[in-house]
View: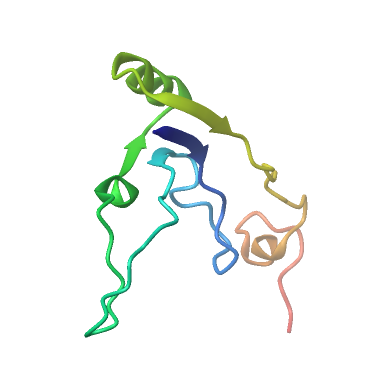
Length: 103
């Protein structure tokens, strides 16, 4: 069983980076999922696909995988930097503004 260690990315629906600095360990999912003939429910005997472990750092996640003799790979996604402008929208409401803000 192979585990994947990855870092979550910033969600596209929010402007903040909440929970984007955590590392996760997930197991590969088994592709075979039997379908019940009577109820047409999708079942699975692989309960490891439901496990998602959370770690603060990449080193903690790799150490956990090594101590439990898990095969793992580190999925390094594209990391995006924060785009903080020098004079952004928040500067309109700054107390130390040189000129008063007008509408």
